[in-house]
Picture 1 (cartoon, rainbow, N blue to C red):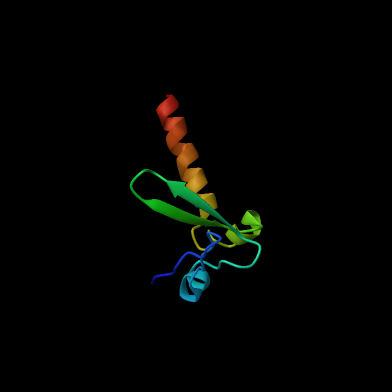
Picture 2: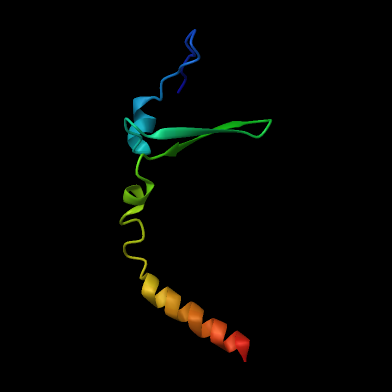
Length: 76
């Protein structure tokens, strides 16, 4: 996909990318320039709400208990 820059330095985020990354009106984009590549990272207006449900099905409680048991073994 390709977009152009307006005289005022504006560009458009293509619709397929907005849909794929759930970019909506009010969201911010962070621009990162590492000297070789420019990366654009979407930041939702409410990051907590955007993350809600992301860990569903990962059974975090069991993972936490396993991690704590391993830490206890390392302390001995």
